[in-house]
Image (cartoon, rainbow, N blue to C red; front, top):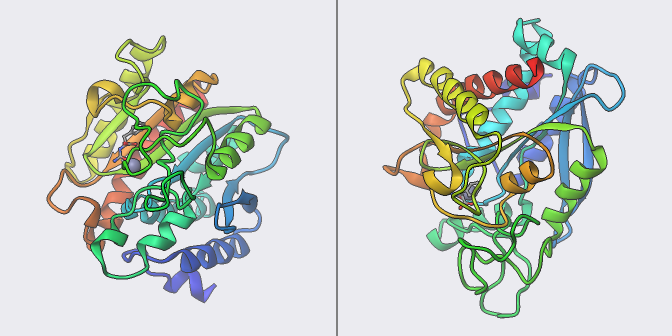
Length: 312
Ligand code: ING
Ligand code: ZN
């Protein structure tokens, strides 16, 4: 109990500390939260998902992940804060969370790329701190790692992904070649009842929906655009942070093999990708004193989307 209370949400933490935090949180809220190991990474680290559930068999579910790109530390830190916020809002019976959790289970993966995240903590050296990809061995011994957001079975090999192992957006040798991607995809498919998929990145302040692989509109674009617009307004109401809304392809850049497209193409309609703060002043090196405000405003957007999912 004392540990959760004294946990510093306004700081970035390494993998070990985040994994300990998960255990402490689960212990403290064992009526609500459980931890599932969904597999191991290339370097054999465990991959964990936190499940927030009030019970019931295979309830409809909402997926949230962070940290698929190692250097995007604000995404991990936001997810840590979210885990605690969901638990405390539920415990204190703050209106929306108990009602959301009456309808759906929430699955939260705080560190989707543990090997990469550990690598970003290796030293103050900027090259390490700004590592993006996984840490798997590639065909080029000088260039390890695959972009885990180009390796999904969603027009793999299309535009906006590289076949060069030395590129930051290297898609990997084949679909789901990366064990981290396979573990998450297998978990979501075997569950079979996910209604929403949300993935947290940084930076640029964008709230995006499919597609990334093509500029053609997704069939649900009107609804997704409306939900994203309302969610970004909710986010803006906290500190006035401005987000742009649109498809991945049009808002940021073409990207094939991305997780949000994969989820949407598998029938998970409410698929969104967030690019959290900031717009470039600090970029990936967002000061830790912005963690709590970033997480708080993001929570408002997530809650809006969750409520919409519950009502539809
Ligand atoms: N940007 C994302 C990237 O993977 C993105 C943009 C998000 C593409 C979701 C496709 C789907 O390149 C960052 N900063 O990682
Ligand atoms: Zn990213």
